[in-house]
Image (tube, rainbow, N blue to C red):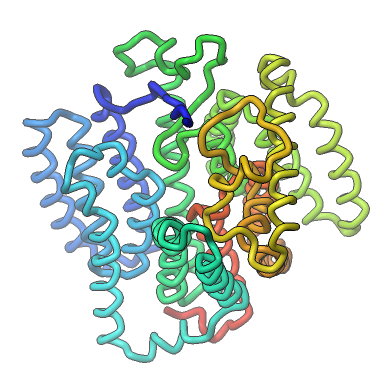
Length: 484
């Protein structure tokens, strides 16, 4: 019988602090939408701010100051979402990243938030469509990346029929990849210009950054009533590592996703065209996110940081192929010192490396057993012991610890080919945009390098990033469509 791995990292007594960080993120999202906005709606904005402030103040008298920030942010964001489908999607992305319904899992109202987000977007999108039916033609043409993503999703669903547990595989599909594909479809229907894509990238970055900073806040015990040692796993021999919540509860997972906003910050920080204020902001926030990565003790994330910085100079170089070779050598060389910089125990690192190699070999055996279809969507954890040559240090339902291994072990060579084509399309798009939007390739480089060693294939994060890059490239190629 499998013994469930237990964590004591829970958000109970300090959930008000979580609401504070989420509220700050929502307020930042609302404020960034005001930059470059015309003054024609200034009176409306003032009335909304006055109304939101009054409601937030009333709530804070009962629930405390943290509730004031959160209520203010959510009301202002909802007002913006009612006026614009793009703002509705931005609010949805922030909430889907921060996932408050997993913090307040006993509250039925919070559990309805994902559906309410989709409903809010649909209401706003339909209103825009009624006002200007021609808008639908701007998103009618599928971009290459989105089209491949939908084909890949269809193939993944078909593999559920070859699973030994068809019902279980289909249930897992609709609870994971299908939800990510729904967000991809919403992004496709909403983004009608480069400005739309860039605005939603900001939402994605704000959500991830809020979660990372909150993880740091808890890691250093600023708001923790319990002793610090209770923040680590029950195993007293394990070193403390930064963790988040929900699908990013694992240290390596949160470090990987932090690389997405970090790529944007490197582009601002290293560019000679950046203004002094932007550069100063980038320095401060880079410091916070790098501190989070170091606290997570993720070797892969540290290597990805080296790759991101190097890729910035590759994009600017007149001889990118030669510099790319230097970058590969630098990443390989950094791997030799990454473990020492992370400060993890040697036994822990050796066990981790040995386990990962076993996971990869097991995935290969699954592929050889069923080359075309794989073992079926979501079946790797359940088929592991049947194909694994060794049973090592971990227990329970294992995962592949590689997004690529997870693809070919569960969906076969067809799934692997489609996934490779999607990544090739994203790389091509971000490379073509390297002069105007160098942050895209940096974010992709860091995140995609890290998830080689993590099972993120069925999470929403890679698909949101891939779609935002792909859709920005789509409208960059069509100057006449840039007006929304």
